[in-house]
Image (cartoon, rainbow, N blue to C red; front, side, top):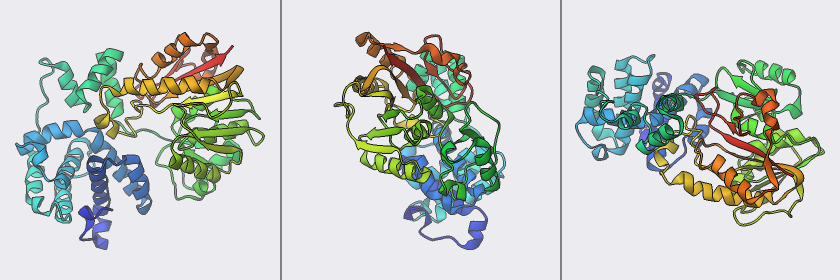
Length: 459
């Protein structure tokens, strides 16, 4: 934890009372907001030090506070009667997290929320002088609530506060999906994502791996589309023997479906063109088998190292790693492979449940900016596909500029490629393939992350 939160340290009694978990959450919130940290990375480094119940609380406090930041700040301006930039930064994060608990969590008594917020402030070197201010604001928050702006006066401004999304993003969602669907989407964006893992079927059958996971304390949920996909009833146990032995990898269901959409045959060679941090590359390695070959390409060298470490943990020895910039040129010869996957870098608009900070960092021009990069990558990646082969282009975004617009532009330039409509006939894709043959998923429709994917065949 950072010094600004825990300089005074914690006594065992305080740790038992759960103060440590809230200190950790406040530290992560500060680093996300003020140091441009990433919540999932910081949570991954922090959570192993805590018991499972504390991990769930920390995760919910961090992701929930970031997701609802616009609405929390709107109310804090009312409660404090001041511009929030004038509030000491650590104290502001304490107020946000405390107000989130008061408004969106119902299992914690109000007096406990107030007392904990004050205790955190007193233990911060920077926020200590603001402890009285924190106490006053939090106590006022238990007595009164700021009314939302009138919907009839400006609907999109109302939606931006009510559902805590940037105004420009609200406008895009309404344009793309209509008001009712946009409201459902934003509601889902603020919810917790399901805990999904991918079984490593190279290490055993589904039944065998589930038996081992259950013995290791995992709570298995309902069946889903694919045999390697598991939805857990609670968070994954990453300190477990099952994790260390490579029996599973945490990966969203929509992300897994992208790999299944490519459907490489056993023994094939596959190129994963933007492979870091390795989830899809190792999934492909499992699908092609020991006699197959996966060439994982990425510009990010550290990301490739993480992908290599993942392949080692999952015990896949058929993955090779190449550091290359696909926006400049293809790393392999033209028409050299049968299968190519391009899960392109994107805005991440479909993953706001896991990465809520994206909402506050994206700019209105980013979807178009990313589309230009994606188009160049697809141009170079497609050149490696031999005739009769296939490429899957995908993004974890719901922005049309990054999805169908990129594919449409590509098809206009390449008459030898066509959309593969065969995916719609497969049970696992039937509900997510549209009339044009594109896979489109959203968190408010079936609970999947927002992905776009298209399987293109070279005729």
